[in-house]
Image (cartoon, rainbow, N blue to C red; front, side, top):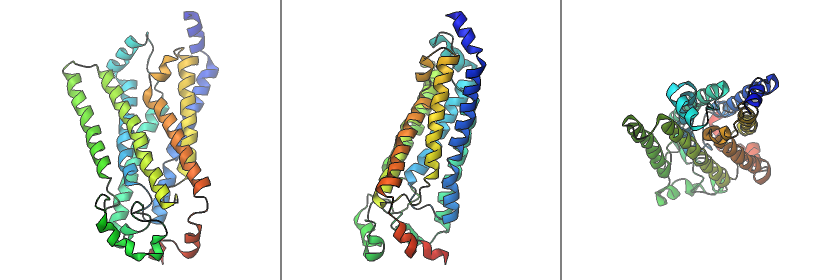
Length: 309
């Protein structure tokens, strides 16, 4: 078995395939952030984009960055991992390092866009159909002007600020920030190993992924449209998810000879599956459920167009 492992590790074909998958997934996943940035810039507003999604995204990618860089560079974490996995090392690639840091920075830029365009937009835009979908049906946007004021006063559970996350997400954010701080103290006291703390950080990313996508799915459903949410990022995200998973499987099985390395990288494995699943939902919403929605608004001048004339 030892001879077999050496032969596989030195196999140039698999190494080349892993490198190609890593470069391709980095390009696809990294590019997936830019359609939303461009769309926000062109529209000069971010209505239709879930505030919960925007606030959770930077924290999730910060967690992914800490896990990836810690497992790759920390001698302590690598030694602890090796002791638990028969001498094998964490399946972290250089493309994982580059993507996680890039994603964290770009998600912060998107959050800044939300703040900036909310600051420069007219107050009345806050109560448009796009930004308050949980209060009003789409048909109310023009035919029922009364929903723009009285409806807001009647429902105190919905934030009147579309750039502010919901109360539930605010609580979740507080818990997700406080938990690793407490765990770090326990590691310092010798109760847990540093690798356990990194695994906790990676689990935060896995928790955030569905939490950030579900509000956007609901928002699209309430709007009966995906306007404001760039579908181009979803296509690239799906491609990146597939390539990232392929790289993890190939590097674990055919290069390192350790199938357990797939499960031992929960952040990369879980992110690939969750992203692919929710991307499928967004594509169905875009091209099946709401494929004809919003076209009439575009012909007649949808909500918010008046500010461009």
